[in-house]
Amino acid sequence: MLDHPLNSLGFAKPPAATRVVVAMSGGVDSSVVAAELAAEGYDVVGVTLQLYDHGAALAKKGACCAGRDIHDARRVAETMGFPHYVLDYENTFREAVIDEFADAYLAGATPVPCIRCNERVKFKDLLQTAKDLDADCMATGHYIQRKMGPAGPELHCAADPARDQSYFLFSTTPEQLAFLRFPLGHLASKAETRALAARHGLPVADKPDSQDICFVPNGNYAEVIQKLRPGAADPGEIVDLSGRVLGEHRGVIHYTIGQRRGLGIGGLGDPLYVVRLDPERRQVIVGPKEALSTRIVPVREINWLGDAPLTSRSEWQVMAKVRSTRAPREAVIRPLSDTEAEVELIAPEDGVSPGQACVFYAPGDSRILGGGWIWRGTR
Image (cartoon, rainbow, N blue to C red; front, side):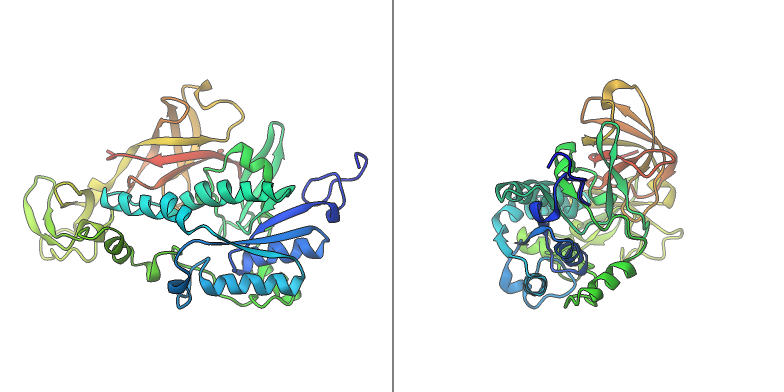
């Protein structure tokens, strides 16, 4: 076995002797990963997580891990002839993801629950389950690349910038990265993924991509939070930066940093934007667009993926991304500890919000150097 060439997953043994647990959401991406690996002869085991109420999920479209998606994942496994299991993770998901999502919104933050789900459920509990099943690795349908570097596995952006999911995977640790595989990261487009699905005759080949957070129907965050935390939508004042009352809002949870539309305070001259939320006083603070500009971003819970320790330098020149929909911009990281830093954006950004992630990239390279969470009022 020592003389056997490396297989496509990097193991020195035949595919048939390599067990792979594939995290299957029921969508086309993870289905293609499972089908491709099964076709290559790997010992594939498909696992789908039931993350929230199955009955409510059955009638829901456009989100991952719902009842329909569990059914679709099972059909793919039947088509390709490998075993498939559904694990009930409802309690884990509620405690690790949903409760924090609701509390963060109530605290005036703008959380990103998909990152927490990867960090606390998929790449923690599910990854441990894969090891318990004696798997050699776990594969997912994420669009990101794992490359071997001089110091071990590195995390790199997907080949297709339009599909890149690095912002949602910055908290992947080196230990997790050693066990994970991302077979779709090198593909040039989603069209290639769908073509592979069609070639394997998968029933999900034309299935639409999921758009919403899986437990937030139709993107209505406020409705979900009201159910989880009754009384969360109490009305309050809309005030300007000097504290002058301009109107009344219908609950802090209905507003996000940078929001302009739907404030209900028109006719006051220049456009006004939400610049801060104060849940304790039940206030939405508004101001001109320039009040949104931020250069200094405090970041904590940093997961650092560089070869040298974060604190081995007083400054790191990086490219930083403060929202999933924005391109990385030039920045400087000034470490305060192994897990906290002050990030200075060379050019100010609008709408930087506590609860969002700040992800670090190597300048001029596709490598992800880690990231952390924006955690308090920025200036």
